[in-house]
Amino acid sequence: METPLDRVARALSHVPIRHTEEGLPVTLDLAICLDLALAALSVIHPETDCQKQRIAEPGDNATPRVLPARFITDAMADIPDHLPPDFA
Image 1 (cartoon, rainbow, N blue to C red):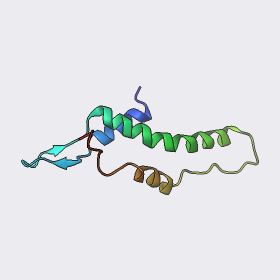
Image 2 (cartoon, one colour):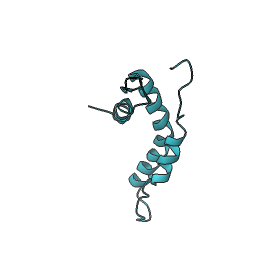
Image 3 (cartoon, rainbow, N blue to C red):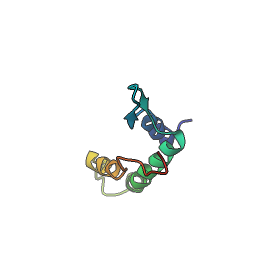
């Protein structure tokens, strides 16, 4: 079964970070994609866990809060655009 970590890492592995002189796309190694996916999910998981808890709790019949797109966008913005020299 594929986990969210696997899905995010696989999606990141298809994103070219640059192109060679021949025009071929260069992508990140799977280990780096997993590290980046883990960093992104570590920011998102506390919020989703909180939502699951609110849904599971019998309460005042309030509708569950939907994770705003801005939260995900902000979390992904924390991932650097360029790799440190030791990853290149």
